[in-house]
Image (cartoon, rainbow, N blue to C red):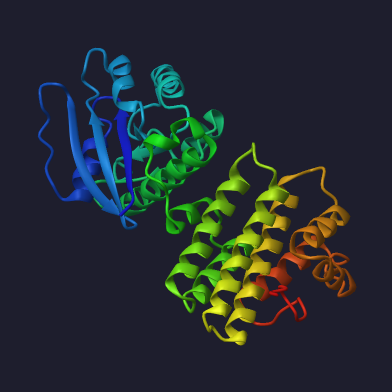
Length: 342
């Protein structure tokens, strides 16, 4: 089970402890340090919670200790009081200094009571400070509480895996992620995500060793696509090559030609979706360059077929839709043979 750390902080009486009590269904007994540790579970993730008392005289400065290494910072705002920009700015500086890569979530509490901060004002605060996540909640009614902890789990997992991929200095001290972990880096409705899901499902028909090798290749692919230091063409080409070796081994062990063909289609769908994703992320790649990249990565014959079929003459959105269809295995846009296996 994935494990993330979240630090709750805010002004005295803002409602952070009540939020935790509401979700965990456990009363919080504050100790002499003003720090309470708790555990919650959401989205199949264990969340370690640090609740920092807003009453501590040096609360802003001692928060640094509990912010270091945390995946998510949750700042609570009492909606029944005017927003304290000075205090929030001071906290924000501490966050940037101690946990620059952590996800930041702004939470408005006590929505069931007469409010000084309405929804429009709350949204304005998020936009003013560039905060990507925000929730209006009530510990009394339960409004937004489950959604908040779900977001903590999801954003924490994303931050943790993204840091693993983009910060190699810390890799030796971190748990090496599995495929399920790495997929949080990809939007679940994207063609690449669907292509990977399809390949993962089809690879289950292979012997355990080859299935594992393909999954490891997908992990390396996702990590390589996210790593700014990696040559993306090499990353995608290596993925196809490793999968090709695994499929050759599987065929030699007696796996049917039809199964090999289906999986090779899925491999190339992932490669194509990865190349399109790389194109979208870059302002210098043209569709012509993408055509050449796919031709070089998955074979000249495949590249020529894609061009002849008009794959790159259509608008980009249509091209992505074709990848989506292929990834869902409703049809294929690549003719046989899909991958040359000598």
